[in-house]
Length: 370
Image 1 (cartoon, rainbow, N blue to C red):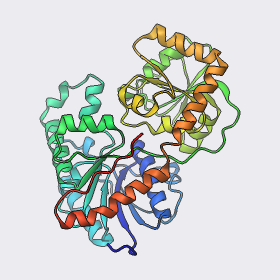
Image 2 (cartoon, one colour; image 1 turned 135 degrees about the horizontal axis):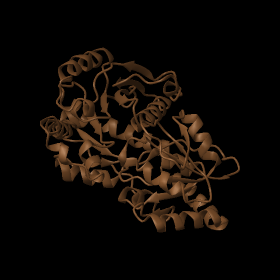
Image 3 (cartoon, rainbow, N blue to C red; image 1 turned 180 degrees about the vertical axis):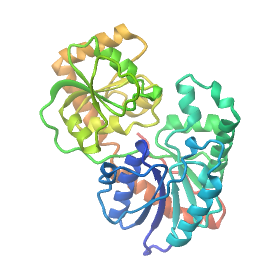
């Protein structure tokens, strides 16, 4: 690729979790920088609300219905995925393959590949203290596929140092990888704050630990509003909003005085970043990722210490000056994680890949540091 050529990116994504938000933001930003981006959806098709998050019509959306690797741990859909994705590469002729999953990196691509490690089943299970089932043959195959994908890629990226360390510990990849913190658009000036707490996540995901937030809600003076998909019995305590589209969730963040995440596992936390940008004071579980990103800009708590958790959050609700201090600190810290910074670093990483491919050596690592 010459200095004057137009960069073409073929990027995989899925519409189930935060990977979709990340992909839409990055794809839109890259198109704004002059790149051609083809966004290839694996797994279920995005909803109409999710499609609305692609703010630039120049992003080419391609749906495949291919199985996601964590939904297909034994690899039954791999031959189909190789065929479909090879056909897309032949048609698109990209300069770089950006994979938001692991195992597809081991395919016989013509263009150089990067893998972005948003999370993984093994690190999720460790954080949730639920690992016995990983000994099953299908999940052993998954682990081998992730390791193979990491080693086949020209480079791999993690959104936090904590996840980078976890990936090294579990899979022992051949290359150190690159840390690029996720970024988001700044939220427009928030509306006047109202006396409620907001939480968001999948109720069925134990890593989000929303049951602890629901229990906290029963002992607070302020109401707790909770957004996200639910299944089965809904715990008493919060006001359940159900699934909200992205714009509706941002509107709630602008109103909320406090945003709560008591997650046991969070490789980055885009919702936390957006809440901080919207001027929320942050109440976060004291886990390494949140410390890395939000140290000195949030109230850190131990979700297991229910008495102290309740006391600290009630105090924050009652203390206006402390709350405003944390709101300003979170909003100021959020500017560190800008979409422009993230997109520019990915663009630089892509630009280095063709030369790395020619010499059969990995691209040099880039890292955004605090």
